[in-house]
Image (tube, rainbow, N blue to C red; front, side):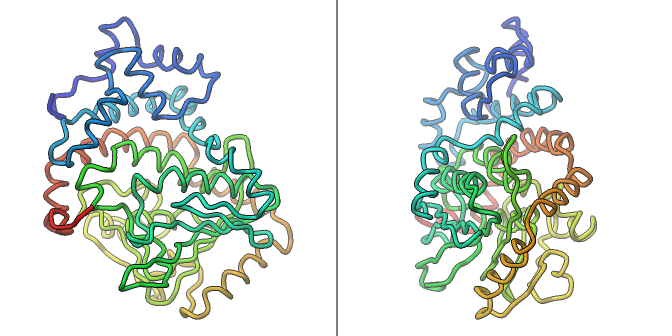
Length: 386
């Protein structure tokens, strides 16, 4: 079935004597169990055949280039949108995605004992009262993809779970790319080569923004909330730039580029449509998202995104000084103020409603022929190897 011909989940469920709310309650014990989104959708596929693709069907889809996919993932976006559109089930799902992952729980003792955990695509090191999280995808300039997502979320969880860590630092790991060897690019956004070759599932977008990005912003469900510092070197592109919207202090090296290439990619830039206008104003946000406007750290207009601009050789000292400033007088009132600011700016209900729209619209974008065309035209993805 073509993506544009997908039957509404509510209609399929009605044919089986169910509503979306009834199905959700059945799969979550009437909201008494926290079930992650991917598990929820695959359990729904088993409960109501034809409602959403099974794990086996998605595994088969993953072997196809984006242009050759059968459009099965659209059903996942539409069902997620209907769940999130309901205030009760939507809130429960958002809160369920704020629970720590099993990977993090399994590595917490290691972090507390040794002070560091290497998860491959992400690394956490306790540095005094700070937890330094490095995103490590050296061959891809710290781009995010199917190989980084689980490790990054677990790393965020570990920083939040370790009681000896008071503040988190998010930065790029050292890369071995010839042009940037030995440098720490903050992030190159989504791995467009993997996207073009079908290696990135649609659920990547939803798990990322309901998962680790929202945990950076809101902390863990029922757990601690901590302040975060971003240390931006070289560039923050796409998804990496999105992370700056949820950080409490952004330190950027003078001259780094900050931008959202959503127009050239043909997808929605996460929650930037919701959050970026708060920083730069509605007009500038529209210019960035719809027309490709960029910011350069050190220019006056970039001060709306960056809290502190330093020269390249000063970044380590700036991080140390900011950690000291944030932890020297205790973090109880800082975390309380952070929470109060968020309640005024982005209450959970507003985020839930946004993500309902995002789930639906991003599914159509992900499966659009225009995305494939944009990747070939602007990224030469058809000539790049995986």
